[in-house]
Length: 377
Image 1 (cartoon, rainbow, N blue to C red):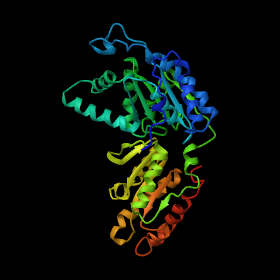
Image 2: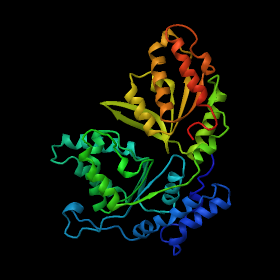
Image 3: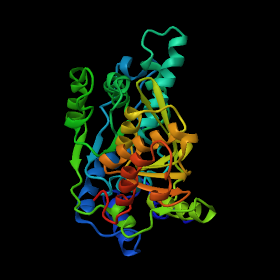
Image 4: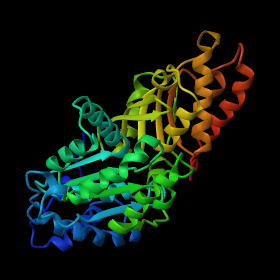
């Protein structure tokens, strides 16, 4: 497994050349051929300097009754919200920044996964009869880290929408720095969501307490990596899996990934491995479960690339799974999500007889179209 290209150039926040760290590392990565030079990416590097300055200082003392009750409250921590199109390098810049933090306690996590942990913590806190279940959970996070780096901030669940504002307020007041990437401008978060008016104060908090920056690179680097590459492998054998593993490493920088759990109308949609908008699952993980259109739409919202393994021949014996697969493909197609898959055969040969075979011709056509070099561009 290749080494992390960022980790080998770690200066640490105590360096006297702090203000040049990000630019130095970025330029070195370009010189070494690890990344392509991009003016928009390089122009965003100074946004991290105030955060590096803040984290180079001693952690604020919050007192025994937490930051909200301490008489000497620390100044709210700085924050950064970088948004822009898919594959423009947002997550790469965030990872580069995190790699320069030396021994600063931090956590880099997918936003959905983090919110699931918050909800689980609140559930446990309620068992103890606390009046505000969010308070001890947020305070525990603030005790453990000085920086939270969120990848792919998106709000699709009303339970997230109703608590995220108070969560961020408490973390920032405790001195926790929040850096986040998103495909959406803040004003489009939780767009058309239930009771969205209650969510609007959080949008204002982002715009007033965090630096909001659009990364306007014209190049989709993720798409560039896949341009002309094979994205459909059959049969689904060891060779296919090896090729998919290679693509995973290329898209994620060899990150092992972690489970992505999405709550949709009380159900849980789980992608076993996910990182930086790329997910990897088996056919049965997503189509062997009782999921429906809303679940697959949420999945398509959360991912930009889905790697789907072991698609079988589809017949009357797995008719329900076949119907779910059709629904999944439709959701991915409409959202322009890149599909990389291994299957028993070519799309046109997956479902050739029995109920549903005729309707599957449309799905096969879409699967063939989604293999195009410029799909999703």
